[in-house]
Image (cartoon, rainbow, N blue to C red; front, side, top):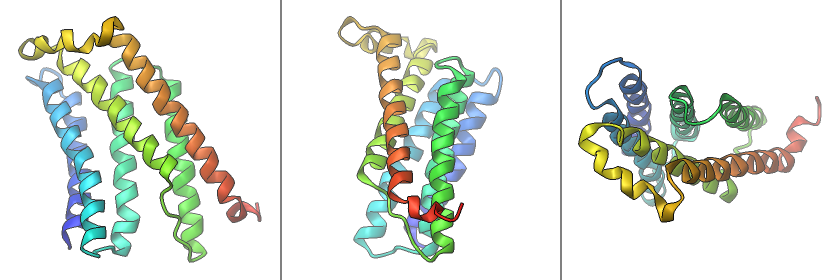
Amino acid sequence: MNLPNQLTVARLFLTFVFVGALSIDGLPHAGTIALVVFSIAAYTDLLDGQIARARNLITNFGKLMDPLADKVLMCAGFVMLCEQGYFPAWIVILILTREFLVTGLRLVASAEGLVLAAENLGKYKTIFQIVAVIYFLVVNAAKEPALAWINPALDFKGLGPAVLGQLLIWIALILTLVSGLSYAWKNRKLLADC
């Protein structure tokens, strides 16, 4: 297994560690652990693609598992933060719906022998999703006494953590929906026989 694929598998493993950190009651420094683990996992998303392209290590496994691992990580982040009460469930449902729609289109395309590449709008969507999740994880970790010093930094230009967080989640949600609709529209021929 080449390095990019190892990083993809590591991202899946880190996702389970992330979920475990936020799920175990009474785990000391759970918020900090979740923040660090999620951040490392998100960085592997950037790193595996760069290495695969630079070293020409693109494989069928990577084409399938890299976007899947990304979606599992992001969905885990949104579900766990929803459970913590940072945003309502309907936002998570819309995000999950988009991710399943795009994955379904990719599976249909694969059955036709086609590979649907990621689009720029989808990449921006992923960046804003990661930024939003990391922001809420920082807010969550700042509740721990050792990281309470972070709280003043979260009050961006007097907006307060809640307002900035809501702005980030709305940008991520809008990009998620627009990129999903764009992806479906551009690939509507795949669904022509429905």
